[in-house]
Amino acid sequence: MTSDPASESAAEQTGPPDSPEQLRAEIERTREQLGDTVDQLAAKADVKAQAQAKVAGLTQRAKDTADQVRQRAADTAGQARQQAADAAGQARQRAADATGQVRQHAADATGQARQHAADTVGQARQQAAAVAGTGQEQLQARTPESVQRAASAGAAKARQYRTQLAVAAGSVGAVVLGFVLIRRRRQR
Image (tube, rainbow, N blue to C red):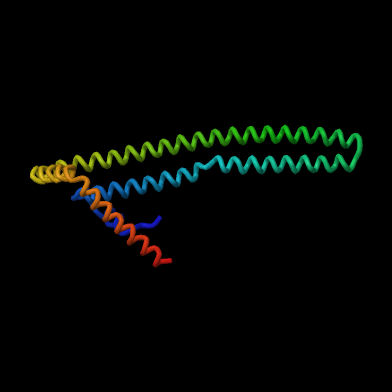
């Protein structure tokens, strides 16, 4: 993870943000951090791939054991063939037992990982909702009534002219996207 100057300056603030933009930026940073945390947990929770690799290793081990038994059986006669057949049966049973155990372990671990991830996501959502709710209450309590009326009037105008605002926002987004693409191309 890298730290950017905006998050460091936000961390240095001692009180709540003074403007809605600062509050939105703080909420967005919190969401990004929570998203990174969830992504990291999801990467750790990929138990299925680990279990499949272990099953493949055990299966290969069982096949190798069976091949060795078959080779000994071919080199000897009669009694050696009977012993090889018995050993192959035992190897298959061990492989089946081990595969069953691995599958059960993988299913248990996957369930636990999913539950842990769901709990973590739930906690993150609760924290984000608490942060958003507290900030909104503080913002309303500190905002003068004249500013609240002006903001309400501005919101009404924005709803009235939403098509024009959407076109303007799209244009700004296209310009920013173009700038980012050009900048990345130059860095390569």
